[in-house]
Image 1 (cartoon, rainbow, N blue to C red):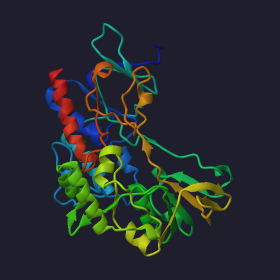
Image 2 (image 1 turned 180 degrees about the vertical axis):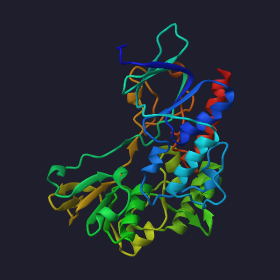
Image 3 (image 1 turned 90 degrees about the vertical axis):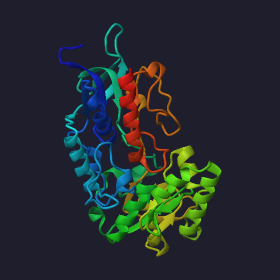
Image 4 (image 1 turned 120 degrees about the vertical axis):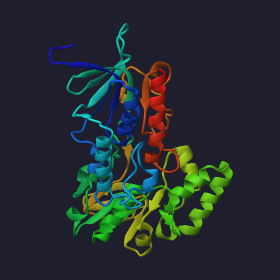
Amino acid sequence: MDSTTTSSSCDVLVIGAGPAGLATAACLAPLELEVKLIDRALEVAASWRHHYERLHLHTVKTHSALPGLPFPESAPRYVPRQGVVEYLMAYAEHHGLRPELGHEVEAIEPAPAGTVARWVATTAAGQRFAARHVVVATGANRRPCAPELPGRADFGGRILHSRSYRNAAPFAGQRALVVGMGNTGAEIALDLVEHGVRTALSVRSPVNIVLRDVLGRPTQLSSIALSKLPPVWGDALAILLRNLTVGDLSRYGLHTASQSPLRQLREEGRTPVIDVGTVRRIKAGDIQIYPGIQMLTPGGVRFVGGEEHPFDVVLLATGYDAALRELFPRTPLPLDTRGMPPATVGEGALAGVYFVGFDVRQPGGLLRSIGPQARAVAEHVQRA
């Protein structure tokens, strides 16, 4: 350890001051342990602060609140981005949480033998945090994923990841291609076209699309109810509901996944596109659908099949990586195909490590899954 390195110790170190970290720290608070909550950002709820402005929760507020504090009654059913930021700030204040900010953890390693601590987290600045328990709550969207596109060096326009998108203003008068039709891509395309930007979507794979509400009932609540049925029944009803409400969109260039939305979520961790108006604009011809990209050209994009169109900007709504493996350079992680930990409580070589906020396979959304996970961590730590 060099002279610039500083160290501190605690009972529980929680890494990440977003919803998962805040919820876990709040559940740990009654245990009268020394809990340290740190985050690489310089503000609480940093990810939510920097999401695109149009974003609203796609899940109802009653199933999106964290343990110990509901959303305000005045909040709408689907809380907007700024409302979530304000809620998370109020949540930290309500539970007396004081995150230590500006600490970017680069490695989590076993503590030296003979010490009380079991794990040591080292930051980019060289600070070391030793703890008996470490909660990793760094989020499923820690690092943007951007595919290598042939011809990128020759493209005359701009290429940016959806993480950099805030609103449509910078793209006025331009031709925009959004790559990827997950929830982010679908909503950014809608935001662009609503503000007069000529917009297209590149969609290379079949998708599952469901309406956010059907006859006034949130689809989230329907998916939770269907998930409690035997899978064969729940999947059949989910397909029926999808087909009745969204229908066949192949004439517009969109092909429907063969699996039910529930099964795709359960088996692949892929959330269906929760439509808030994009499908209507596609049907109206306001958003063009093209297949996957073959290559970029100086003036635009050539798609699979040879069709070529001019574009000024390519927005990559191509997802994120939790980037967990690099945090544990000396300890193998049992990650699934999405790079997510399969369990909340670590076992064996990972005893004393917990993962909160990575369960993307549960019906009802990620926020809904955080509360049970945070409580499970607190119960396990109390017994340890």
